[in-house]
Length: 230
Image 1 (tube, rainbow, N blue to C red):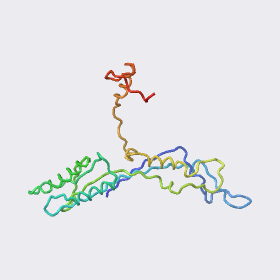
Image 2 (cartoon, rainbow, N blue to C red):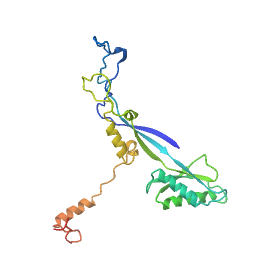
Image 3 (spheres, rainbow, N blue to C red):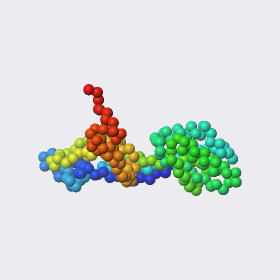
Image 4 (cartoon, rainbow, N blue to C red):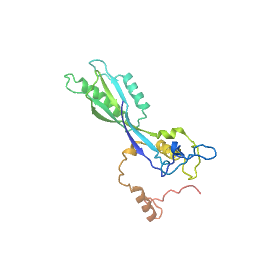
């Protein structure tokens, strides 16, 4: 498995670390002799982060020696792997592209068997060159992105010791927003590599205008169906 981690920083204004112990520099209460913990805007700033990791789970399809038979057992194992990774219809998968230099054409037949099977399942198949090929097997790669929240948020709700005369935010503030975003986003890749917006489809808007101008009739000239029975 290969991984490559990139970070998406979500700034939520002044996210407080709350009150921090100032060590030997902290003032001392003249009565109790205890250190007074105070916070200031400088030591109360924290950027909550959503960490987006790129991972590439890999599955190895095994073939009999000197044979291109893609057995039902291997097909079942491959489908189980894809289901465990949460793949969906239309997702892109990469299949290891072996050298086609063998005279019997076994490598080409193996690649074609896997590719055809995956396409029949609704996946987009892309070839992938690999220098470290395995004997009597080909690998299937699936690249996905996983979003995790700033580790500081795992500490949960807490209130630092000391006074807070400045009314600065507490350390956990901003964690709920970051956690919700990480869980709701359909594809975490959009946080680090967002898709470009396509053209607007004005067909539905045009149909509504046509219906209005035709006095409530559809494009075919028939009365438009009402919203419900009276």
